[in-house]
Amino acid sequence: MEKQQTKIKERTRVRLEEPRRFRVILHNDDFTTMDFVVMILKNVFFKDAGEAERLMMEVHKKGQAVAGIYPKDIAMSKMQKATRMARESNFPLRLTCEPEEL
Picture: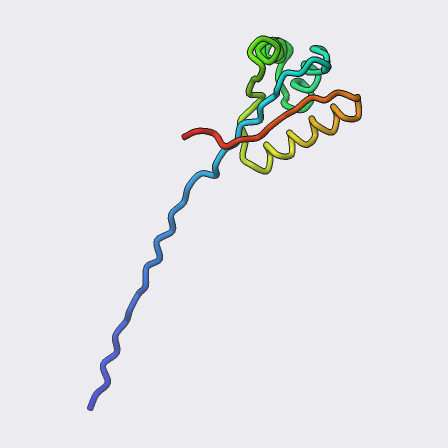
């Protein structure tokens, strides 16, 4: 008897998605100076002077503002860097990171 060979190809479906993005949010407090917030926005989040001023005023008036939207690892890194700079300058600046709404 002859053996019959069969070829079976298995297909694996790979579902690619863009990585989830996270918003880095600056929160208002009564002690961190406006100049320091502008400096953080320019040096950590790479905002130009006009955008940094606008965001700083939004934080001041509304209580918070989104500094940027990034993949999680970048968002966490920027948040940690800004927090470290604030603590080194004795400011209680608070930043949070939350998933961007779809």
